Image (cartoon, rainbow, N blue to C red; front, top):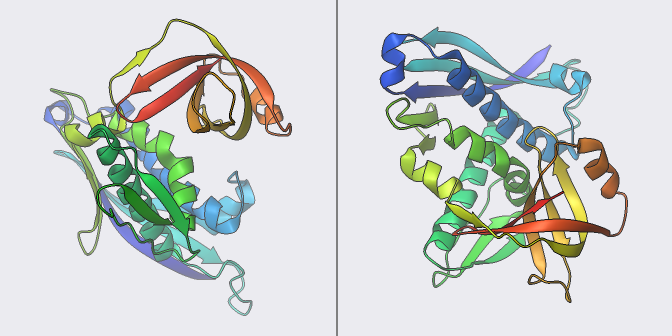
Length: 274
C-alpha cells in the first residue's frame, strides 16, 4: 500500500494547561481542524460527506502528544490501496494541506476587509490548488475556485476552532508545517472570525435558494434574488432549530420560503431561519 503524507504540528497554549489537559477544548479544536482538512478532500473529490470508505483513503493521525501546552504532531495521510493502479484523484496529502492553508488566508483577507468597512468584490478563477489572493486597490480578492469552495464549506469550522480561544484559558492555536507555514489563531483572529453582531427583532419572509447545508456545523448558504427585503446575494445562515433533514430536502427545490431574522455584523449580514 502506497501513501502520501503531510506533517503538521498542532498546538494550543494557555494558562488552563498548567492544571492538565482540558479535554473539551482539545477535542473540540482537533475535531474542527480535522473537519477543515476534510472539506479540502471533499471539494477535491467532488463529494459532500466523508464515508467510511473515504476515511480509508484519507485520515489524520497523531504520532506524538506532548503537554505543558498541548502539542500534537499530526500526519495527514492519503492511501492508495493498489500501487499498480493510478491514483484516480491525482492529488496528495500535501496538496490538501496547501488548499486548507489557502482557504484560511482567503477567509482572513475577506473578514479583514469587511471589518474595515470594505465589502470586497470576489473574483473566482482557475481550478489548481494554489490560489491567487490579491487586494486590488483594497476592493478585490481574486481566489482559486477550489480554495473558494473549501473556504465556503469550512468557514463554520474555522469560526468554531477560533472560538476555543478564551481569555484566561487559551491564548492561541497554531497549525504549522515543517516550513513553519500554516495558521496561528489568536484573540485577534477569534474576533475577526466571530465578530459581534446585532440580531434584528422583526421577522422577515424571504424566498430563497438554499444551496448548501453542513450538518456538522449546522450552518449553510442561501441565495437571495431581487425583490426581497434584503439585498440580493449569497448569505450564510444558521437554523434556529437543529433539523438537518428539512434543510437537506430544501436543497432539492428551486426556492423555498423561510421566516428569518437578520444578524448584522462587521463581516456582513447573516440570516437565522426557522
